[in-house]
Length: 142
Image 1 (cartoon, rainbow, N blue to C red):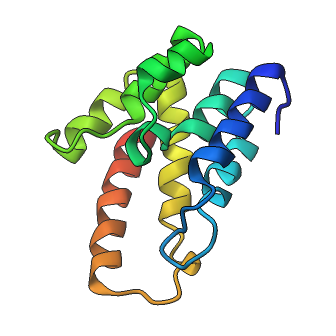
Image 2 (tube, rainbow, N blue to C red; image 1 turned 135 degrees about the vertical axis):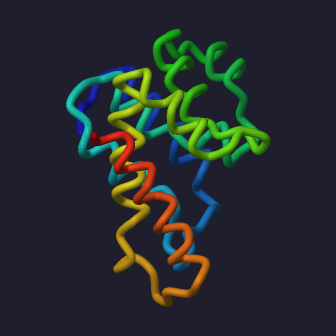
């Protein structure tokens, strides 16, 4: 993990935003963004990995993040990583591919989410979701 004032601020916000959330197996959700952040090699991608699901999965908005002092580069990446319900998934992925930081974080996200050993039970929905993630990973890594 890279520790700067900005990444520490993001660590605290990530924990606070996700502290009561659980993943599909009942583990604390914050382990997921922490895992992604551990793989990043610079300050901005670390912050974005920590906050990649904050806007999508909590009440926190991009505007609030800007008001908290996160730089425009972080806001831009988080905007790309936030999947709007009315946007087809692969259109969302194609936009991510245009930004190197967003792409790097999304590849780590998809890789972690595709690890079926994290699940206690693999149902049909998990298989379908995994196929969607594989298609996105193939696109982002070609």
